Length: 244
Ligand code: ADE
Image (tube, rainbow, N blue to C red; front, side, top):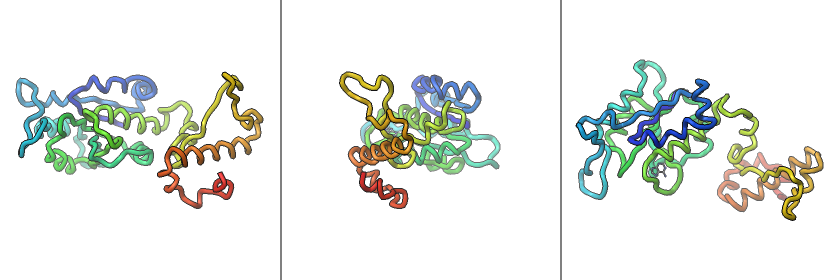
């Protein structure tokens, strides 16, 4: 997968060269490029923002540097599928695991990191000509810019690409992979500071372990995320689940 990030703070994205994502880039599974928006500024001060038409607080990112930066990451061959352009914004659709799975199937993702009060809306309109544009929020709170949101999304998406994670089995049972949150996990010692690992996990009865874990998932989800329980498909619950 090719990933482009456009930002006025390329240094912010440096952690993407670490750990599993960094290794995937070294191995050629990810082709990760960070573009400095200021390289497309048109004046000697490398200015990329200006005051908003209509007044109001703060500054707005200018269209020309953005237009050129987007043109620079777009493949020359217009015949292929349009890349997906993700515009991080608190006004976007809220990111979730389903979206991560969908985006992990794409060949080319571009992330446009806004700062200040946002990007001139005409850039977003123009971008529709060459990209599938999706404004995305990572949650109902406001960050100073899109960079941290991009790191969150790239990590969530890239780990779903085959070869990025060492043990793909760990993806199957994790939280949100089937709506329910993950069950609690324990390791040695069996007793620590007076707290014992649940008996059932020491016995080696796989069926009982499976039942225990499933019950814990349901209880945990009901307490922490009752909103998710309502998304559960009734067909996916068996009679024992309903008693949990
Ligand atoms: N930029 C500022 N706040 C954001 C958020 N919550 N999600 C994505 N991008 C943002």
